[in-house]
Length: 97
Image (cartoon, rainbow, N blue to C red; front, side, top):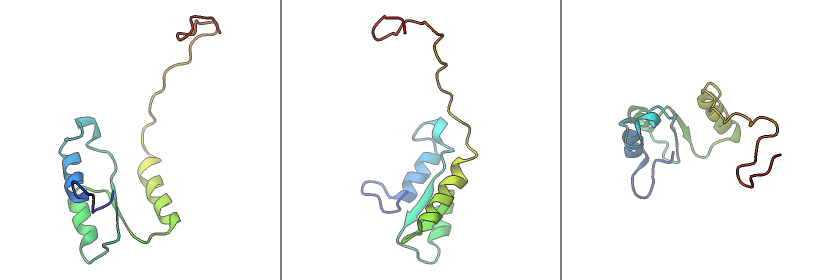
């Protein structure tokens, strides 16, 4: 998340997400700060706002990939709909497949 968003800055957005403004099920969504404002204390302010990680700009692609992997590889997979049984009618056309 960029720190300088147009309507609500990234720090306030992270606080709102953690408070449940985006829905209780999204309170634990990983948030990685990404900013060109890499001043002393920037990382700490982002983490205090509820962000999970911090990447300063300019960044190396490997650094971004590592952050995404760090916060998503351990995530529980989203359940997909089960495959329909063979010969089941196609709901959009009504024809058997």
